Length: 462
Image (cartoon, rainbow, N blue to C red; front, side):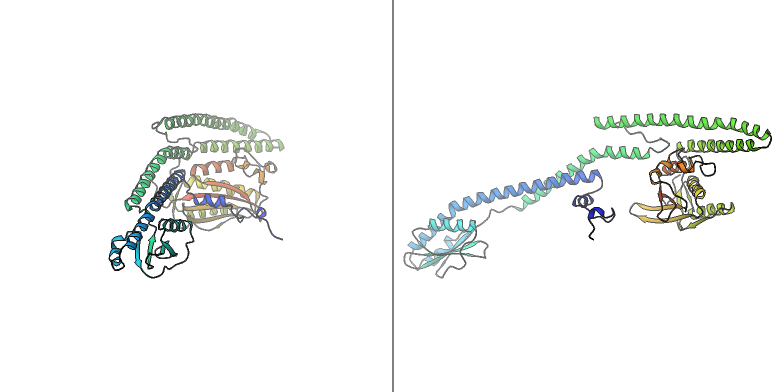
């Protein structure tokens, strides 16, 4: 059964013409606007040149049709009145740029087959009356040339070789058009750059506004619209930073202050007589303590990446982590290598992988850390994938589990429920590092947590 394009997967479905055209366009707004303006100006210049050339051609044709047939007719009349012996000496005198005469012979060529050539031939034939026109032939050389055989009064023949001459265009005109197009292109480039440069600066400032909310302040200068946008962006940064700082301080203060009463409750629990209730109280206090500890950690990650980048041996880091898990009796397999040192924030990277591996060990028995380094047009990329053979996560909750204090409904128990902050902390640290953390259910079963980041092998700045 044939398969329709609508049923094909997205990666193999045929691309529409509009999609192909968009792929051919430059990616940046600056390049696209400049290309559109320059191409538009070039088309406008070409149309103007064609219109001028067409108008000059019509004017030349009309001018030629008004005078050439009379000149040819006058020249034929002169040859007719001259004695036959003197006609040969007058041929050079009567020759012009677009016609000349040959005594005797027969006209060659076929009947004129184009409208302009027929009009040209008819005008000449009408002007040479009452001389008899024996034949009118169109030849290929010169292009659109005519051979008109005319019988003089003494019975001899003269062949008129006539051709249309278009109005020439000086070479400096073409150079002037190219220079004019170049000047317009430079002006368009400068104008588009003037418009898009503030957008690029605004985008750079927005990209630098990380979790620490310590982005750069835009210079409030330039045209009125640019100054207004920069002022509004700077004010927005301050408001967002104030709101987030207040939220972080409240979360950190609550988490920190809860540790004191929890500690007192643990002491009182230890003084209680042994029994089932004491064990329950201790489990609840342990859960509360873990929640407070993770809350403080999450509050700190909201302040951003204060750890400076360092040049490390990533393979040694991964091997030490796997060895630590083996020492604690938990099996984690390492697959792949980076193969060279890299610049990153090692503590943040270790914390991300620890949270991901701990989460995988809660729900699976076969946990693997896969390392894949690659290079593309954007630079070197490192992909770290933590996979397990657990039950996975419902597809509609893959994004929600990265939010703080969110737990999948089926894992809300004392053994595997956790605090709901492990993946949120990993997500927050990944964002601070400029990496991307994604979750997906594997076709073979289980979950894959993939961390993708750009790597740099150069030494970090001081």
